[in-house]
Length: 611
Image (cartoon, rainbow, N blue to C red):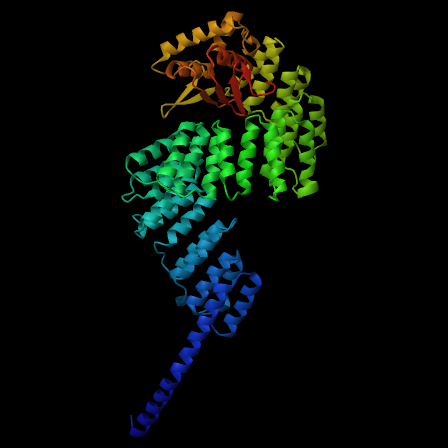
């Protein structure tokens, strides 16, 4: 190369070097401007304007700006708009190297958090590989959350295999999300427990994920058992864990454990968030202490619609309809807009307290005053209200005028009312229609069988039972749970598995003698068998709630309350017997059945009318 050429090249390089600071400064200023605009962006209109600025400034290939654009879009629920720009053919031609794991993680996270877009999160997870970008330990929690939202176990297992391949299976955050994912995938809870048991590093989130999984799946005994194990190991629970355990207590009716959890919050000085307060209110209301639920509600400085609804529903379950209605009206006065769940609560309150006119008023106000279109659940509440009030014909007319097709639950409410009010022909007719439409639903056959038993038509009743046997159906066995000395005990009809069985059955015999002396007469028509009266009485004595009451009388001090949780409706005979037991043994007996609470005291039940 001669001297003149070298001189010209040197001058060109010098000129370029002098221009670079100016060019670089401008680019940095433009980049910083866009990042600032995106940080303060709070509407989709602003986002579209910033998109235009990004294009004008030539920053459409700037990874930092693109990632911030994706993050802001996610916050504005506009990730679909962002991804159409970020991954458009015009934007990524020959620029695949500009896309990194951080950008993909942002997009995957946004889709994983967007309702109805979980599959898109997984699509971008696949796209990541086609762009030559490898996932990192931050990628998989978002992908696993998307799998949890979809609830597909096979998909979850595939992602699990992928993260093992990349060596992220020992990351604590990944493990915690994997436990959550498996718990959300139907039968995946055993896989979740395996991941949990094999986790080398557990924190409170790990325990919460597994406990929460058990609680959501209705495996409340296991949730409570795992929480107790957590306490033994000295792991400090956070508010998320407590909410999960309170949910399990609510399901089990474990009031004493619920009380202990409240005191634990005080001892550990765990702040009571609104969500935690709502969980406590719901637990106390559904575990039998609705007055404590009301007390907590009144102490709250800030309440959400969930707070109001929890108390209204709780009062309704306890048959305190007038208080529930009053609270609902107070909520309206305080300009808290009711939602559809709040209306279910107030309509249930009207139903359990026989407030027919009030029920009609609230039902009609839904659309008229609050623009809430009634759902099948609200129509069901109205049918239940009319049926419980003995207005069977009006209930049937209401169903026939409904703008939506009645579901089987509504028809069963009417059949139950027919059974209670002596409308046997109507009940028989509807039961037969139900069986034709739902031939594999065992409760339809049981309802028809009950009607035939009431009519003493043993031949027809036997045929119904034979039909059930032929189809391989069995009546759901009744079971009753009781909490005693921090342990949960469950009894089924005729149960002799407990080590105190001999004493329990002796106590049941004593109970039978004492309450008969007080005037109790067994409701033998409840026994669906054509056998003599003595055998029918014996069958009634073996019901699970009577076994649980006998167990409690043996193991608790005189005068203390007895609290039971029944998986089915309390039968008419047990309802009658429990009233007498409460009087003879001077015990308050609180029973939560499938529909409501029954408070038995001094021979009287809190429910207005049993049917």
